[in-house]
Image (cartoon, rainbow, N blue to C red; front, side, top):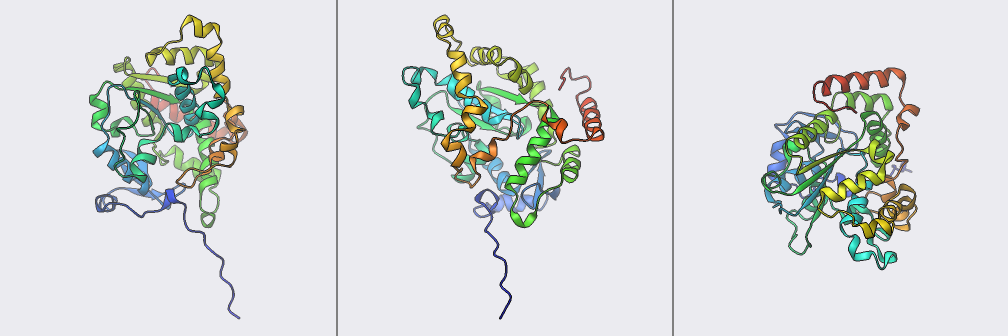
Length: 332
C-alpha cells in the first residue's frame, strides 16, 4: 500500500496571492526581497517591507483612497498597541451614541479591527475599491503605512492622524510571538535569534521600525494640529491623562458633566485588556481574512521583553535605537 501523504492545509486568506493585479506582480520582480516572517517573501517598497498581498493593498489604497478633512487615521507599527488604540478611539468618538445604553455598545460584540478597519489590510485588499460613501463622519480608519507611503489625498487633506509607538524591545517580542501564531505549520516556528536578526536589520512588516517611528515623529513636530504622537508606555502609565488629550486633539473634549459621571473611567474599563480579551467575540471569533481575534491579545504589558531577550540583545537594540534617533529629540 502507498504511504499516506501528510495533508497540507491551504494557506489562510491573508497569505493567498489570488486576486493580485498584474501591476503588483510586475512590481515585485523589480523590488528587493527577503524571506518573510509569515509569508515566504517580503518586498521592499518605498523603503519599507511588505508581503505581496499586503503590497497589493498598499498600491490600491494609494491609488483610490480619497481622504476627507473630517477623517481620523490611527497609525501604528504592528504590535504597538493597535487594538487598544482602536477600541479607545472608537469608544471616544462614538460615546454620545451609547451613553444611555452601554450594554448595546458595539465593542462588546465586535472586535476593534472590524469597527476600525485597516485601509491596506482590509478595505483595499478584500474589496479592491470599496464603497465608503455610507460611512458617517468622522470616518475612522487605521493603517500601518509609513508616512512616505500614505495616499496623496491624506497628505493634502486636513484629516487627523494619531500615531501610537511602543519601545522597540517590547514591540519586537510581541511581533515575534504574533507572527509565530500565524505562520503556516509547514514553515515551522521562527526562532527568537532568527527573528531578532531580521528586526535589527529592519526586515519586518512595515519595517524598519525606527524609520517608521521617525517619519511620524517628524510629522508631529511639523504639523502638530494634524498629527498626534503618543507613546504606549506613557498611555499605560497615565491612561486618563492621554485619553483626555486624545479627545481634545480630535475636537470632542470631555465636558465637566461627563467628567463628573466618570465617563473617562468607563471608556478605559470597556477598552481594558482584561475586558476585551475575555469577550466571547475575541476569544472565539475570526477575521474574514482568517486570523483568530485571540491572536491579537497576548499580555499588553510594558517591559515583558526582559523575560525573552538576552543582555546582548537588549544592548544591541538600545544601541540601534540611540543611533537611529540621535538628534531627533525622541526618546523610546
